[in-house]
Image (cartoon, rainbow, N blue to C red; front, side, top):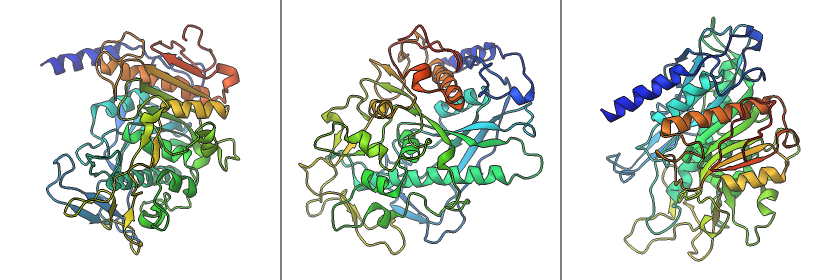
Length: 453
């Protein structure tokens, strides 16, 4: 009953957010700075049926691992071959918009869930985020990806976790390519039309690592560094295929990187190679080969200072150890020969030295500092008492009472940030802002914030 009452109250609040006076169709885009994106542009939205983006058959074969001990939601260990039925997405889009006159920008969102098979994209959090974006004139895509991992109780990261995170990155790129291809070859009278030159990415927790990986691992070499294997063993690309894999309805030659305009990162962070001397090294890693203006796109991020999954501070808590080879008779979390690329050398394994740090689990703070170093527009919102993900009472200084209200605040902030990006605003225009327990009340892209911090 409590849940029903809260849902009704939130629905009433959302309904009471006043829509703005309609503008001509050519102006009805959130890119136009006339809009105050704390409020909505489109009161009415529609939600599509699931749309598949995986090939029915692929060569080399598409592999999807499943583990019986993945939080007990599976009955047996398996590796499904060329079964892409779970690869689909749902589109949230405004109605009563003249799509024949003006396509709308799009945000592609990836859900949280620790890459577990038990946690799919049917979560209230992402559904709410998508609805709020669509009401602000940003077509929102809720995308599913491969899941299924095993956690080593004695190490920070198992080979199964490493595999599924990389597979999720492949799927994220695959859905992005497919969206672009479909948008450019629509059927008659499309219900919506995406401007595929204006794409934003977003994700929370595990989904955040996908969006960050797509945006900031520009090359296979960067991805290989972020998913390292020991010398003399197969690289991640050799074991699992390239990040730009050919498992999806759109070919690998579909260009997408120049059209990624920005990222919404929610309590997540990227894999970063471990450096003994880290001063400047993370910025060097993300700037390698960056020669285009669209490299390292802007980012808005939300994070809890007490996050124990993606530790916020840039200290030793971010340093990860991989699983080591097991003693005789125990389960192997260090290497596997299951579910690898057709013809791949085996096994696929991780570093075997328990005392050696293998990887840095970055946070929003790492990326905020990197992008600031690179003179890219970025904003970071931090709640000093929040752990991993929002709970009632986590409010980023807004004094909002419920998670639902905080989710709306996140979309309002992200929509205004995206609006600024689409108008080519720079740190010189707006500043790179760090909001610690402090509410940002900026309402549109051409008005610098004057109240916080």
